[in-house]
Amino acid sequence: MFDGLTGGAVKVVVGLGNPGKQYERTRHNVGFDVLSQLAEWHSVSGWKSQFEAEVGEFSFAGEKVLLVAPQTFMNLSGRSVAALVKFFKLPSTDVVVVCDDMNLPVGRLRMRGSGSAGGQKGLQDIIQKLGTQDVPRLRIGVGRPPAGFPAADYVLGRFRSKKDLELIPQAVEAAAKGVECWVQSGLEIAMNQVNAPEG
Image 1 (cartoon, helix red, strand yellow):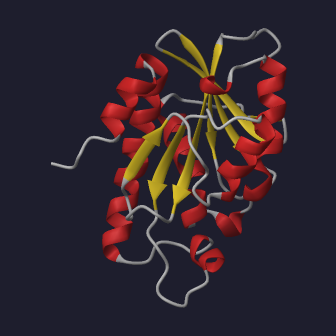
Image 2 (cartoon, rainbow, N blue to C red):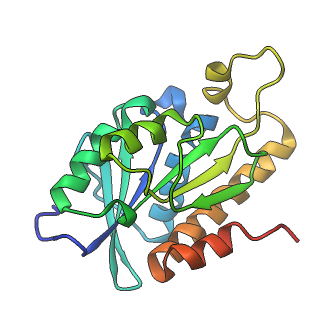
């Protein structure tokens, strides 16, 4: 499907999550939700299983964009991303990773061009497999678990409160717009849009 593409001709949006119905709409899967939003907006169909991922494709602002949902489970996401980056001979800066973040309040977005994984195991694996921290990432806040509540159980759970259920769809939509901005205008402008203080 993608053999005609060469290095520099494609932007890659990696949404992190876990495959399987039981993980749908969990906190850990907000990256998948952003891919679904983009796929809906851009009428993506005909997803392919490649690079241990589900891959969709569309064109936007003169760029070919790949939506990539690794199917390796969260903690091994780097395997899929590294294979795709190697195939297309892409710089890591042409990849943006969309993931959940417990260190941000529910619905808050934060975009950065590089840095540590901040405890996000999928992002950490991608950084390790690519051998660089220079991987743009867009984090979606899912909040912290209640005292004494295991973090692993928390991120694999679903949003419950009325407030969270209102905030998350808005955050997913804003994150998808941030990805579009990154494709169209580059990292700096996208960061200014995504990280703008709430007014």
